[in-house]
Picture (cartoon, each protein chain N blue to C red):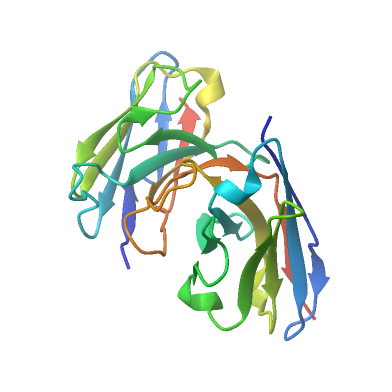
Length: 124
Length: 113
């Protein structure tokens, strides 16, 4: 069955860096677009970034993280990454990785599989 | 960017009664292929979201048929025809129209009356 397991969260000081990982299993990882979605404590969902199944330069970000976060993937290891730099207090959230519903297509898609999330706390 | 506004923010419904949640988009999410790029998710406490509905009205596999989606263009509705105890959750709409960002509504908290 499809499984997504995030790791790498923790407490980090403002201005520092952190790398999140999402290990995928149970499906052909390279065939799916992958996303990061975050949820601040007690708040709603915020889409953060996407990397299409082709990887490479096919990435998009929410404006609030552009220039600070980088999404990437290693299709040989079935891992999705989110490199977070110059983090801010407002980046504090649970970070979920999520998979596109539709496989191997340029058509945009909802998210049909989610990990349990990893908590990032930005605090001095 | 497309903004989604859900109403109400919270809702209390008796068991067995109908629950209705609305989602209004700041611009049309109806594409030239005649599909509405609008999804609904359910999130229970301590769990990640679960996809319920996509293309505004297509139920995801395994989702009970008491859940249904309707609407087109800018106005959408999620209906639970007969509320069950396990439906207590926060519900989100999301648009995945064209270029990101793929925004979510602010969420609607559904409780038992």
